[in-house]
Image (cartoon, rainbow, N blue to C red):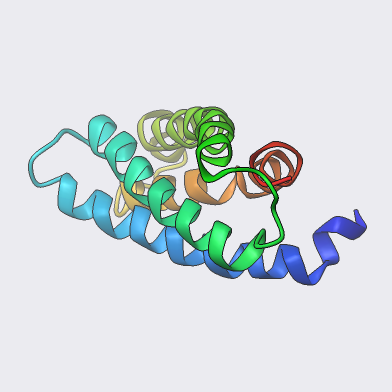
Length: 132
């Protein structure tokens, strides 16, 4: 638990927040040309690239792994996270929120929740494998 109270985790939250904003904003743009499900995935990739650059520069700058090896592990950790994001976004948008009577802004609410949920699992994965 103490690893979630560290300066490194707080920096991860800030840089991850910036990447999440890129993810969320780009989904709104991609949604003009793609269906919702596809735009969630493509936006996640856009945010993931942003997150890698920021994490390498500011969070895990002491990493001794090569950029290539870090990138491979980063993608693997994020494959788990994108599945979490997609499943939560779809489940909330099409089932849970409508069942609760929430229809206005449902895709936006669902996508925001879907982005936030993998923060903890991603941090642990990146700390252990991507940038050790």
